[in-house]
Image (cartoon, rainbow, N blue to C red):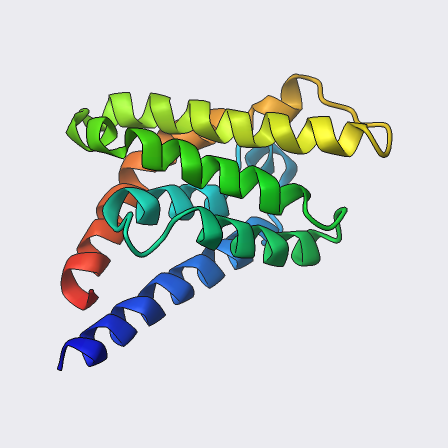
Length: 161
C-alpha cells in the first residue's frame, strides 16, 4: 500500500516539473516575458523544501540536463546551477519553512538569482552574453509568484502525495 502512494506522489512531482518546463518556453508578449519567472527553479525549490528526502541535488542535476536539452544550451550548465539551487535550499529549508511568505519570496528570489548568475557566468565562458538589467528582471516575477506557486503546490501535495 505504501509503495503505491509513493509512486503516485512521484508522478505528481514529475508532472509538476514537466508543466514548469512547458511554462518556461511558453511564448508571452515582450512586456510580460521580461518578468516571467524561472518556473522550473520555483517548482524545484518548492519540492526540495517540501520533500527534501525525495527531491534533492541529484533531482536538480537531472532536471537541469533536461532544461539544457530543452533550451539547447551547453550541456551541463543548467544541470550544475539547478543542483546548486537544490543544495542551497536543502541547507536552509528548515528556516525557510518558518518564514512568512514574503520573506520566503525574497530568499527564493536570491536563490534563483544565484542560479541565473551561475548560468550567465558559465555561458559567458563560451560565448558573449548580454546580462544587463533585463536579465535580472525575472527575479521580480519570482518574488511575486512564489507565494502563489507555494500555495498551489502545497495543496496539490496535500491531496496527492
